[in-house]
Image 1 (spheres, chains in turn green, purple):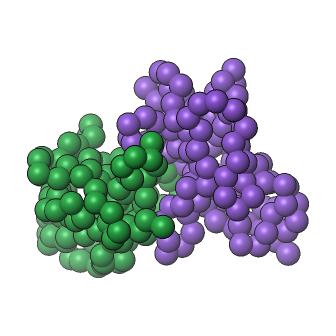
Image 2 (cartoon, each protein chain N blue to C red):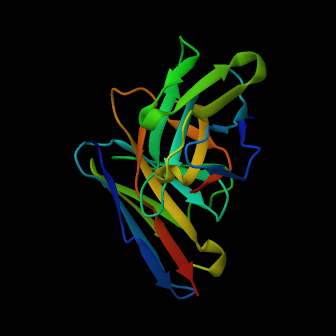
Length: 116
Length: 111
């Protein structure tokens, strides 16, 4: 079946530094990918839509300058958390829709970010 | 505004017993409805989905869900739970691939 991978699976960084998370679709092309954030015991919150070849679109309340998204190719989207702070610590999940399968998305395993 | 409510934060069920997870939603039109399961270290896996038609939908792993428009509900059921069903379950609604998720229900299976 379709697979979406994320790298790294977990990362620890110091306050003020930036960290990049990769999301790859392994066996299909994805012109669009989605980035979600999940707090412990809470639902996934859609942060932004990553579009190949154009700017990402951000959900209301998401700081686009803090969460930089780049969709470099049809199989890769990256999320960079800039100037990270402890409140950015969270579980970040990406997904990619499968073209031709209405409404279906394939989710990556997530990246646990801890900012110290 | 759209929202999804999963009233049960945590459910414990005995292996072999039946399971029902509740999901209520608020949406401007009839949305697409989904149930996903999340296991540690793995991505969310789609259990089943409803777009239109028969309101009782069958999914993978023996799960089924029933869409009730009058109650804005999409409850998930399984007749006989296996220990491997212990996981976090999320109900999601939306269209055009943009989904709103409920807070999730953690299912614990006891022997």
